[in-house]
Image (cartoon, rainbow, N blue to C red):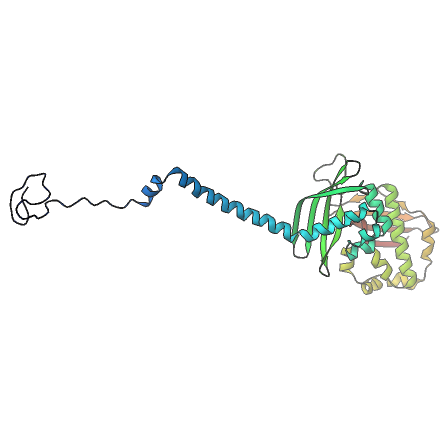
Length: 305
């Protein structure tokens, strides 16, 4: 190998010229490993630590989301637990204090006790909630109530916020027995249908005699209240109020249901029939929707034929 500087011939294995000392070969440079090489050459322990950190971050985010959900829905859970604690203590007056204004207006202590008794949750032991949702000033809880006798009753509760406090808007207990998944709400018994008609007619008569539909409006569904004010109802039934007929006579008659009760696709219960008055009969059509704990009036039509 010849030196590029002085031309002296050197041994092929020489690194420097034996005459002038000029380098004959440059030392091989080692390129830094690529990112891929770095990753492949990392110890397995370091790779595991990296994945554990990523997994830990994901778990932390999920945990924070769960904690946030429990925090923001704690108000409706407190309201539900407070309600059932009062029920357990047989303090129905206190239990009603957890209900919304509309709910209380249409449900007295007797009606509440009747619902709780028929739903087998009057003797409540404890509650557990499996699903909770909240959107603005509305919330929902789904879970179950365990009774003192060991029974478990599924429950769904809806809430509204009134004056900064969560109040129970409705309580639902799924019907027992064999059902189709898409079947509509179950119609009340025949005797219960007659009771609905008699009560609604009585409330109507009270307002007609007062020439003010305020009392009648207080007994109807929340949906109907939102659609019609007392003034509008006064106008709608003005002709009947001005007729000065003795409608109170209907309270002494038993209504006759003309057809089998039907519930349409919107969940509206339709009851039709007549009062066997003479010489003319008083025919009616009454519509109800299920609100809170019971069927509430949605439409009322009455005619003398």
